[in-house]
Length: 221
Image (cartoon, rainbow, N blue to C red; front, side):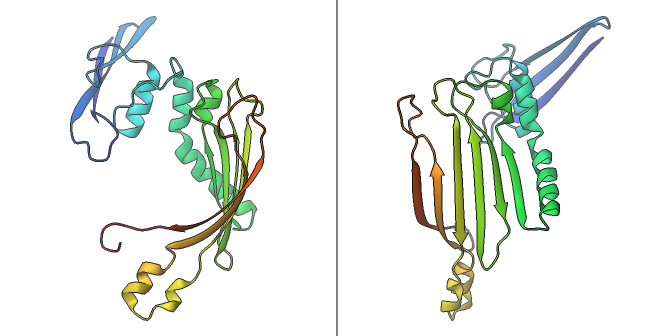
């Protein structure tokens, strides 16, 4: 059997990138000893084989994703990350149904890092839950685990409350009402998060409060 396929990709994942390159997948050999090879003319390794994790991530995102540090051979984790989109969609629907609609969204991230025993500290395995808005207030919770060996405690947690003040009621002009409605958010949070990730660091609970403004550059702001 001798088969070959190719996929056109953007050379990197920046939004403004228009240049493309090719990713090649080849199947060659007898049925009892089939061989797969992958290579690309993307990046700096033109014509060199690429690991399966690069193939999976690049095919999933539609742009060339070079091998992440510490991810050599971690194509199982890359495949899991590719499936997180539909998995999170089903998880959100299930938790919403069980909670009677109170939980709006449930998201898992970083499964690839967990399964791949990532020790680089680049990604954590996290579960995030967001409630629906009640009286313009919603709750958010996050628990994350860092699969690292240099952390005294690999866990971090965060609980936040988000309030959207009805500032649009203060404006008489319809244009300004559109600019203000649901764009300003007051948020307060309690969290434990090691900043430097050092064994000698004492994990403390920190409180944060802030004002956030969401905006669009075109047609509105």
